[in-house]
Length: 159
Image 1 (cartoon, one colour):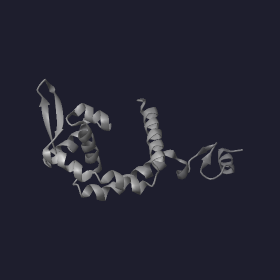
Image 2 (cartoon, helix red, strand yellow; image 1 turned 90 degrees about the horizontal axis):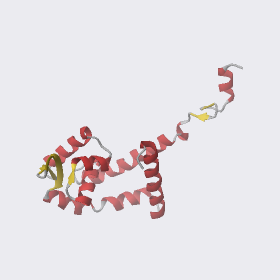
Image 3 (cartoon, rainbow, N blue to C red; image 1 turned 90 degrees about the vertical axis):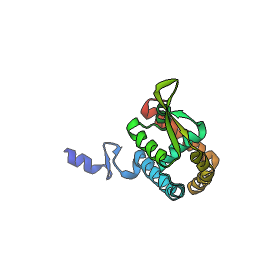
């Protein structure tokens, strides 16, 4: 039997027990879900003058206040090359400032301006709107977060 004949005896999209069907790929389900969710954020964040990555930066700052750039990048899993333009745009928009740490000139610390602090109040409607759009119970949402964090840790090797 030739390879073409044995492949033909498998169901379409399956080769030697391995599915190459799009709908069988976990990566595609993650990709499609991510695009759908970030797409749902867009109109909400447009009203705040933020992109989704900028919103993530603001979430970290609203939670922690001043943060060294290195810690911000680590929290968001972004490198300097990606993070720096986000910070520059947010700084140009008057939402944050970047300053050298007086105790260690090598460190750049990011902190909120008064406008950045004030934006937090306007952003409070975003999480409930996204939660409603997702249609998950609180328990389902927590299970999804737990599984996705585990998956990320497994793939990156960082638990």
